[in-house]
Image (cartoon, rainbow, N blue to C red; front, side, top):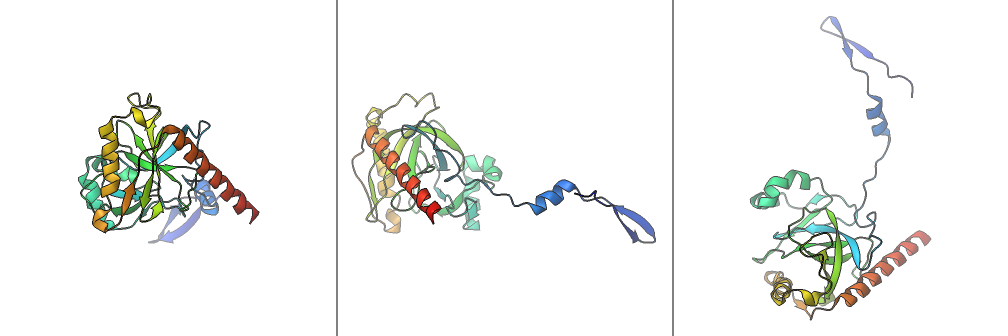
Length: 244
């Protein structure tokens, strides 16, 4: 690139120097940057389907339903009126500014008087029959900011029917949380913990007049199979896309 030339203009009878354009600014204007997409660009990890990376969309204790904008991977605020709800919660009163820059979409506020019992998100580079990535509920000590990713260990599956369609959830623990990382199967969890999870998903759409049915929890081996199946579906999807 040729050296930037200083422009000079005459103003109020005197000459004033205008700073030369910075080459880095000019360069950034001429190049198109592409943001990473959490679903497609984040690796699932070498330990999958047992231990895998997952992206958290909804923190534990939240009533706000955040969802990844699957087309762009960018944040999209659906309703500006939701901001006062975010500010009322302790985690967002401190972290609202960073969250607004994350690749998360505000989908809706839950209609029922319930909150998510644990951190909730999806497993990257997986695909289900509903064309979404595989959902995962991650049990750990603390809520996590939407858009973060962590390592999780599958311990079971919660088979669920949402309005007549299968919408199974992987139940996992944070693989790096010292309080939970030793769990290997869902049967090791306290029965009351499982009852809370079941009750949340049975109730959270009732005020929308939507039917949700939760079946008996399945062991870790079923979770591995479900994750592997969704990984295979995703791989097939990518191959077919390349062929086109």
